[in-house]
Figure (cartoon, rainbow, N blue to C red):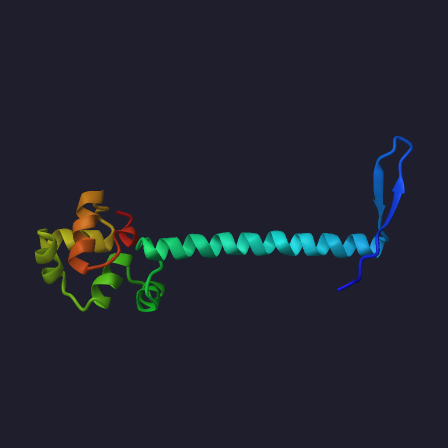
Length: 131
């Protein structure tokens, strides 16, 4: 880091002014920019930690993401990840197996209450299903 050796002078109105070299000024700007970036990173970290504490972490498990990349819908990937059949999921959510099939294929989208019941049956974060 550059050493700062400011000089002071008086303006015609009597104000004390600080005079820096361009290198000193640029070094101070760099430090200030890094401090702002650090503060932003800390704020993001704090928000993510609060989400984790409040169980609002909406990240999907890697296995679910991989299944989706391979072509599964989110619901199908979650169901397979939990090693459940459509019948077992339907029973756990008090729905018909055909309705689960319609949700998995995208023929139906499901209301928030229904998606919360499915999330409960899957024992997953309802935010993953948009509920």
